[in-house]
Image (cartoon, rainbow, N blue to C red; front, side, top):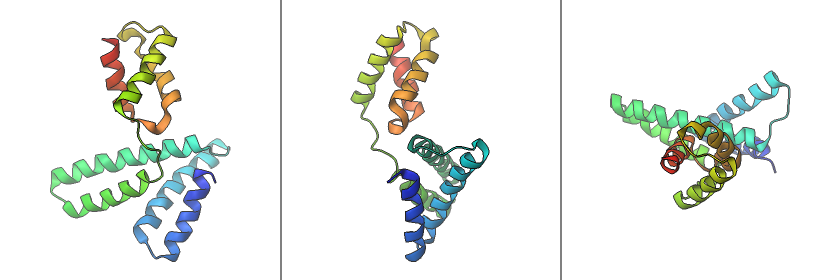
Length: 147
């Protein structure tokens, strides 16, 4: 079952279970999926859905930080609940050792030698790693390896 089909099925299950939080979170993700289908006139792949989920998770993390700063613990809890729902659909994140070994291979194959070549490495890394690691983690690791 594709990730998109799984989300659609889980929306129905959440509606039956009257789980408003999960239903609304998954509907928000479904809106982003529909946006791609309508605007780009194509079927979404699991990679597209994972990218949407990563973006949505990042938005939830940013919102949580802002709400913590403002002292709004009620909203922090709401964002945390949404984040947990979204992360349940994402693949298990890579360990630092796995990430570093993959990035070393990419650096070797692209022939990167300095920070000037970071763009080549980052592009290849995002394709190879996908949603198994956050872009910030990849960026930090690449900088460390190229310096």
